[in-house]
Image (tube, rainbow, N blue to C red; front, side, top):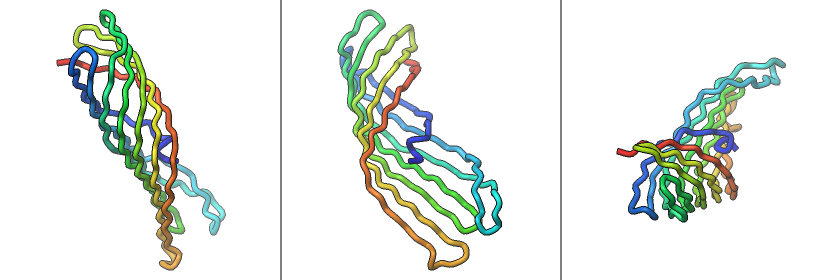
Length: 168
């Protein structure tokens, strides 16, 4: 739920083995404190709440260049990713934490254009993911109301990435 709505910034390192083969590593990062209005049923009023959201992880992958002409190439590839997301909500009754561990295998295809030391890449990824979600609720009023739930699910996430690389 929360990881799907996030749009992380990603740091990538790519190594070209030769003209056809390349490998990469990436680190997605997302840190945001969003504000939301939550309804206090006891006081019958809306209360402003700060909701910190975090996402981090890592990935490794391989790309194979199918067509390579001059500075243009098309590729297909496969990546393996791990993401961890966390969202905390605080309000008058207590605090809830929603954390997710996401493991994904990601088939991908795309095109890239290289000029001088720069490369522009447009890539479509299809993440086949296994998600372990843990929700914890800590009550302020009564410790007996504290609870924890764990859910496992499979999700598919799609992404379209536009990247600019600089080659040393």
